[in-house]
Length: 231
Ligand SMILES: C[S@@+](CC[C@H](N)C(=O)[O-])C[C@H]1O[C@@H](n2cnc3c(N)ncnc32)[C@H](O)[C@@H]1O
Image (cartoon, rainbow, N blue to C red; front, side, top):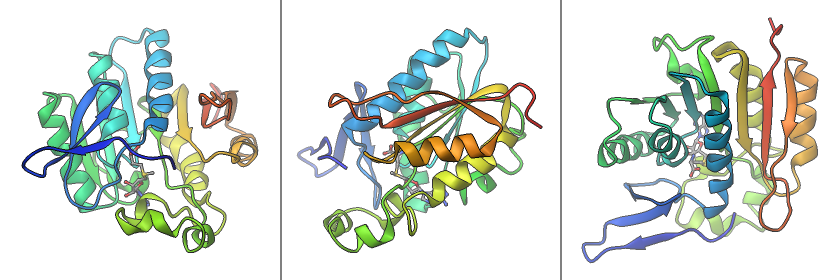
């Protein structure tokens, strides 16, 4: 995780920039990183390519809402369902949706991954699922990366023993919410490309399309398509 792009105004309200949007943070919520703009901009470009008239997009692990709200702001035909586990993130994402005038197209839900979407009628309907999951191993978070927990919540970083526990669940649970041919995009840590590729390949229902790279040439996002014949 690189340095974030927060700033506080005179009243102490924390603001940050994400893909040109000015958003706020309330409580214990990860400040969006500049590196995550790669995930959002790739999603926006691919969504535009689909040319769908009224795409449903799911932003799983939405945190402050940054990724999904940037997509809904850029592609005005999008209906957005965002979800996160914690109370502070859901309150922040709702506040940011309101600041951007997106409440009529954005619903923010709270719960454990896709359980949060129960009752939303989203099964089999999403054109795209985006996710910036926690992806640092518990061991590393308790060692060399412990400084991350000084000001930000553990839920934002802790990806379990190997750092990929949430990705594993994402790849397993996302197909039920995607249309045939729907797209799954997720961020992963520098050096985790092989693990991400292996998860997708072993699922047998996703076709890996691309692994977009950051400015230093490191793959940081997985782009996959649900096979048309996936059951
Ligand atoms: C790396 S942060 C990303 C936040 C935001 N999307 C961003 O790009 O800044 C991961 C997010 O996943 C959420 N999270 C962790 N475990 C979760 C779970 N089981 N279900 C839903 N959200 C979870 C955390 O609360 C945190 O907001």
